[in-house]
Length: 400
Ligand SMILES: NC(=O)c1ccc[n+]([C@@H]2O[C@H](COP(=O)([O-])OP(=O)(O)OC[C@H]3O[C@@H](n4cnc5c(N)ncnc54)[C@H](O)[C@@H]3O)[C@@H](O)[C@H]2O)c1
Ligand SMILES: O=C(O)[C@H](O)COP(=O)(O)O
Image: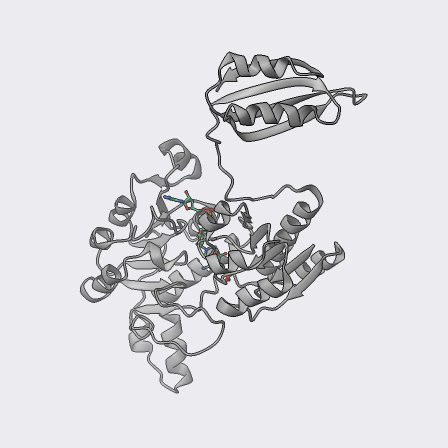
């Protein structure tokens, strides 16, 4: 298969793709129009990206494109709805960079408490200021609130507990029982977390439902002088509310992601937040350890290689969890040319829309059973007409 890699992925991943015999086109500079142009020129079957945006124009550029692999966790940078409408699979690499992000989260918390970046900047400027920097609070015994207990959230909990922090959390599927098992406090909402903690860190995925989850009411609930960490996505935070909390509530923030974050890998940028004395911005490097990059690149290669051999897509994020099928028809038939085509023809005439289908062959390859789930008005006469067809052995229809 032809695979276009439009971002920097670790060499172990590229090697795994090449060893599998693929034609790999590796160009980490691709973005925007250049990506669309490369997709049109190379006609890849598979596209592998990190944070590079995959737009509707990119989806239309290569009719051969069957799979997009996000070599990372968050796939909000890909037009997943557009891919689904065009029958293109989208997969990600869950859990492969979660330790790296959790390590950065803890690093930002310690940095804020001890003002490590300002210490270092002043020392580099030849300024000695123990008077100011000796005023840290210390973390032990404080309460950290984790919003979203997915792969990263769970890694943060483990590390926070090792720092003797008390942990409370909210996650959409967290139950009080599960919280107890993890040795953490259960919260009923993100605002409840904010109310209960002096350090809060966000780890929910960016979706329409989580947009501005950290809004004005969230920041109002946080105690004055709290520490706030965002390593997930800018869209989860209402930045006006964040700025209000920085000014009015003495909030201290560590942000690996923020509005207006540059899409390019290197260059200058302007951000009101970056210059704020209460804010430490990192360069969206949560996933950027060699350990995480190797694991992610190998997983991206595994997804691509599995697809090329079996047609299956590990970690697929855009298949319907449940098809809208209303009925299932089971057709036992002789394994001969044309039998299934005639069955499908009859179903088509009855306006039965097939959503899922499978055909299993019995040993000896004399007979087979086809199971199809469909949407339609399942009248008995259609099933009877199919059963009367040559080489059909038996038919049954059930309502789902
Ligand atoms: N800064 C970085 O470099 C970096 C690296 C990796 C991931 N991330 C971001 O962190 C996010 C989390 O990563 P992860 O590996 O923990 O993913 P994950 O899929 O394991 O966890 C996602 C969490 O989001 C929650 N969630 C999803 N949809 C939700 C909804 N509609 N309402 C409420 N909660 C919802 C899930 O319940 C889960 O707790 C990613 O989606 C990505 O945006 C950033
Ligand atoms: O969702 C992710 O995995 C992170 O945002 C990592 O992004 P990156 O691959 O561009 O570093």
